[in-house]
Length: 296
Length: 313
Image (cartoon, rainbow over all chains, first blue to last red; front, side, top):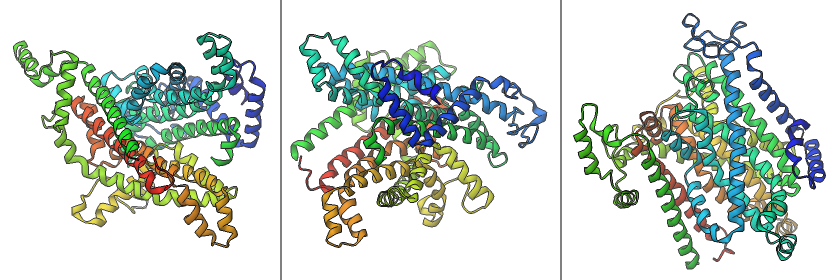
């Protein structure tokens, strides 16, 4: 558990100990967060070690073995092309986690950059925020669908499309935090003593943004994994030659009454992973805002 | 008050303008030549050039944007490349299932979520509260199509209680219409219920800590009277807000739900349009859905006055 949280908190050298202590206390209060972290680590391990987990080539077609129900030989059964569903599901973890983590990282970084500047430079604020309001008025899955319709299906494009639709919310969060922080006496003091703008942003504002962004990033990760699955499920996401939980389910769509297992196993894995991420996020949120913790 | 309404309306117009610009840019950036698609396989270069001239495809970006907005203002969303029908007509044909599904879900979700949230807040810290919160976390985590298939495989395929897929129009009988909407609404509504429950509980906990609630209890009002008459009424604003914001979840979820349950609605239209790369339809649907979302939230903002007499803008 510690392995997942410590390295992220390290860059904020000065605030490490109290923040870290709060995390530790919150995890103690919320054993579910630890459960989430463990599930997530297991999924990560499965994704990384996929070739060594008793899998065969997830794309290997074998017409004689079509639609075999789950058995000792085919743990999750085989699909209509005779491909081993267990292998496909294990390899599918790679896409979900890659998309979830990349979108979380990218939208946090981009949102942080835009939010910091717009929150601090008043002239930009009105224009940028109207654009963000407009982008947020398009339901995020719909915006991702529209962006995917523009480009060809690839994991990189899925990541880009979901990042664009998730970023405005991060911008909004960062901006609102910056607007509060810039009124703080220590920031005013820094300005009065002639500190340069980049230095104020990086030394005085950034450290206070790390914790809320970590929580937000977790939720973005969960929501990105669901969006990827939705995109793949309706045929606008990960291309069919790469197994992902969404397109395994999409391929099982026409057969689900005969072969429910084509939908059930990837569905359970996806739900479990998103649940793990959300539990981790809830634990972190409680750690960072004890006042909120009692209410949510 | 009037000043607030005017300001809110103006900001809505700005937001819609940005949405229109984004949506138009998406079409402008689409790869391939729409004229070549319209002209078909046997067209000569000359034909394609004529279509270019007729549709003004060689004009500058802003000229085309202006023309598009002008058509939009006259209720023209363009023509589907695939079916050659006006996009407004295509959307009009598909609106009933989508409207039925979303309204049904909205009503069920509010009817379930608000009482759940109130009970969880009233019993804060007990196992009831914890169960409600656990359900809420689950609701956020299990994607709509997983719930949908779970429901179909158990209730429809195993136990044969409800139809597996399909849609019956309202005119074919209310009961049949409703029967075909029950599972889709539950599937679509789960994440929405999770969201509203969470906010209701949080908002109620805030209000229950207020002095006037203690006063109401002290003067001997029945607990339910305090909970609904005093607390819920004052906790309404965040709840109404999240109902409006959550419409985005309903819209996104409807696309998936209609695909799983084979409902011939706007979501199905969208998915078909994506598979056929029918950009004018995709664009029209996004614009309509976004407009609905923006307008619902405008209505929500303006409705605060009804819920809270203290709000005097």
